[in-house]
Length: 340
Image 1 (spheres, rainbow, N blue to C red):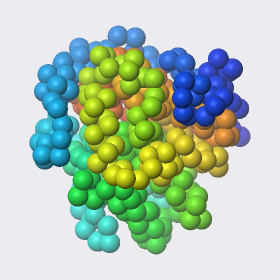
Image 2 (image 1 turned 90 degrees about the vertical axis):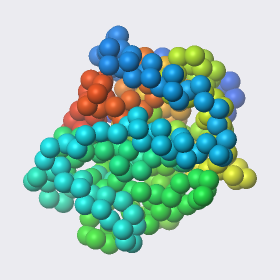
Image 3 (image 1 turned 90 degrees about the horizontal axis):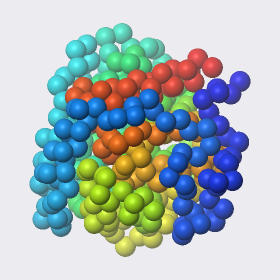
Image 4 (image 1 turned 60 degrees about the vertical axis):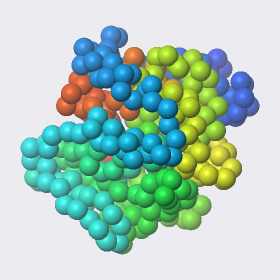
């Protein structure tokens, strides 16, 4: 029986993308398509506003070039550093892939979550995203494997995607069943998670049971209307930052390649997608367009649109109540799916 939270029946005419994801006709209305719900936070919390102010002052004004990549990585590590979560143990993995397991005290048998971190494909690692992964491990009651994939510019496309596929094949070889594995990712990691599923379809590999994506970056052509509309509202970065990161990862590859920009891929046959985005971020339409196109392709989608929050705000869980609420919502939805 289909969970009522999910909709694979298309979107209202006022929100459809008749000409695909390119051009003005491909842009969605700023309001959420289909049966999307606005999250119950009409005014950003004080904590959210303070964090956004810090991002605006320390990160958003910076111009970026290749010489700045190490600084960007350091700043991201400083802003997303979180305290260890009681009851979660961390086990490093160095072979055959790099990453870490985060395990609750008594994890559910046979179920786990595969996590792909954000950071524009040029920054971040499992340590910078423990605010998300540790809380998902706790709320889901399962072990979480966070992949430490190689970063651009040292390792441009397709290095991250190849590493994700290698990690998936390793998990399957270790005895994990694909239909009992969940997938999740934020920002670039959310886009990578979607590209990874498209690659699995091409290679005939089994897909995960469901995917939870937080502010996924699905269009490396940076062609959405929200990039201009939210230029002032977005706290994290600018259009120039976005295009710089896209160039580092994509190099000379065609950025409309679905394995780089999964928004342009065949979104049919995917597992249920749980999507979260903020109405004020540059990547708002990367999520809204994804939801509309995935539903048109028959993929079940649940979309939650949050108000006035920084991009990929679950990274601030433990400091920002909306971050904890978003992860609680995603975990509850994944558990409801597994019970169906």
